[in-house]
Image (tube, rainbow, N blue to C red; front, top):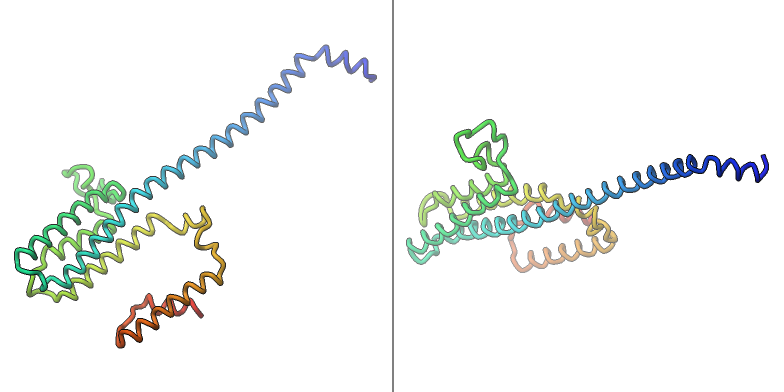
Length: 230
């Protein structure tokens, strides 16, 4: 078939060829658009999660702070000027913790709302998640605390510290910072030598503290840190 015949055939079936080409272009465009839509949807979901994470981190920071203050209050309660000062400071801490529990319900809803508390308002049905329980147990420890007598100040302080550690662990699991590290390539991408240098510096500070404060005991975290250097 010569060039003339090809041109004639093309002119004869021009409409068909144009339709086929247009359909092919439309399919390719649809595939591209679909991929872009998925990408945009994924980005929007990630932005929403980041926004929620930022708000829950602000809440978590406030919760960590108030539990640290409550533990220190427990350890120094006998130093309060009088019973009035003790009760006033205790009440302020309890109000702050109670408020944080209700604010935390915005991020950590109750578990199994259909199984418990059907007569209650929606936010209070079901079982509190552990992260809010940690705050509530600290609240009740404060509630039962007296200026003198009862469990020792150190016992109460250690108990509230345990509540804080549970809260921190649950908050970290919720925020998943390791996942964020993977997205933005932060700490895990540091050179191993740089990280070893920082760990060595913390070990040097620990040694200096031991020389400054003989007999000071370190917990499991310090031992674990030493292992990282090996």
